[in-house]
Image (tube, rainbow, N blue to C red; front, side):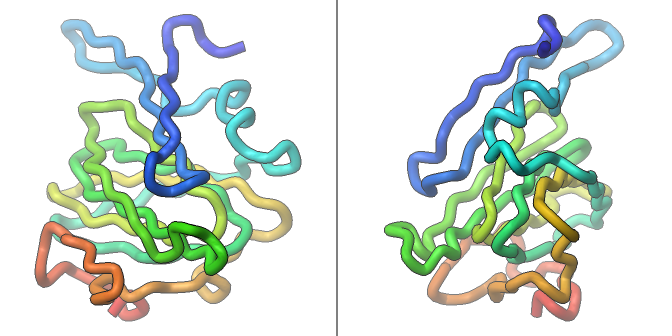
Amino acid sequence: MPDSHFAYKVEKSSLLEGVTVITGTKNEDLRGIIYSPYQKNFFENLIPDEITFLHDKFSISKKSALHGLHGDEKTWKLVSCVAGRIFQVVVDCRPKSNTYLKWQSWYLSQDDPVSILVPPSFANGYCTIKQNSVYHYKLAYNGKYNDADKQFVLKWDDPLLNIPWPFEQPILQERDK
């Protein structure tokens, strides 16, 4: 049963079918902020029955670091910003979809308990706005994890996508160039 102190607001993306925006309730007092980004009973109702969240990843990045656009055909990702501020992008990579190669973006920060649930066959990417921003991935899939060698990659500055990234010269790793 979900913790009664925390509630979630669920919004389906108006642009990308299958992408879900989840906003949690945050509680503030003199010490700071507390919120619950994940409760199994709630979130497992948002993904297929045979899929479960299996592991988490955290990425701590310098300001203007761009990660992505990456994806695969089987992994669900629940992503959020734990510290700092990021520019989050999700691209529909399903060739038969009405929104193929359409994208949507959000600004995520430590100040708001917002998570984006990214289904399989969507590319996920983000750029850090603040130094030492912490990005959290919660991953659900069947079988073994599809690491970098099994993922598809879209060029971050592909003119077909025309994504207005916050930096013209972001810090990139080799596979994202």
